[in-house]
Length: 458
Image 1: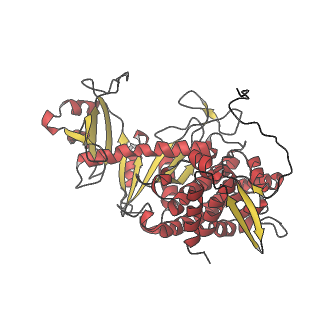
Image 2: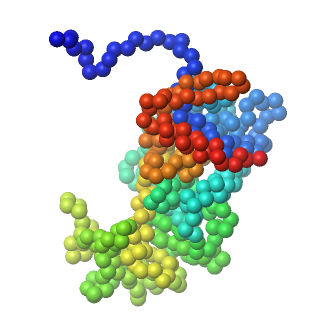
Image 3: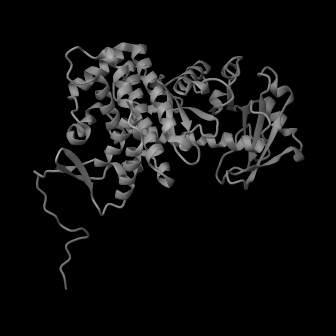
């Protein structure tokens, strides 16, 4: 009979090991930076803020922070885990140097933010070209989702205020390009707002839409090939008028508040006018129907707007609202898309829920809290978070296939980025040897081969 020693084997530990690289899977993000030319673009954008005798490039410092955030960090000091692996991440600036750069960029105000955003837009167009058929504009249309995020503050920070959910913090308005069912999404707008900012503030939605359009390739900055999707926060006269203004002509699909006029119109819809809602695979959605409203409900709205309402049996335990009718949960949205069935339009609007996945990924990538005090500093942090999310979207877009392209940041970190490797120096080459027994080593090496096959920027 063997004496039991516990569930896990006992191992002795000691320091002083050499040639082992932790977070070695982060080389996937490093190669994505290199192949996308993000390093060159950010360096050129921040050149005006580089001091004549500075040792560290401001672009490299900012990218190091973004890489640390992409790997799971949530404050400036977490750049230290990159500093510990110079063989993979190169020389990394000290914490005081990083902090001084953030202060400098915050003092640069709109000029510094514009420089960063223009660099990201330039790289985004290049990445979509590299992605080919996997790019989000392959179908000929780009879908941009706008949604608000509540970020809790646990201390007094500039612009932190009570939120509509009775918490305390900030209420940024974010924009994401939807990659569809076969991918994730990437951020294209991040507007920092006080915690008491409204959910349906039209000027904020217009500004967020402007930021998002500026991130797209030039051919998508106006015209029907760009679809702006929002929840009911975007269903205001001012915002819809801006989207459909002459010369802009954007497509839109925005949620609408169920007003008394809409409620009364729904009650008058005859039974044959209701069409069964559908699922993405074309099957009928059980217990859900859609209908199109007209008449007085469209008075005062832009010409060509369609108002579509859905009624659905509420799930068990759900409480009905005053705006619901006949025991059915009612939702409504407006769109200017013509010559498309209302069932397809309702499915397209329902797929806006993927923006919630993007928000969840953002919370897990530096947006759980805003670590700095001043609003200008936290706006710079929000730009860093967007760069980190860009990398977490571009790497799967360029290097992963199948279900791995759908992995969210937490899973990417657990399976790919956290993999350790042995650093071998032979001749003048440095080689990372990943553990053979790690289940996802093949996925990492295949992804690195795909990145290596991409053309190297000039």
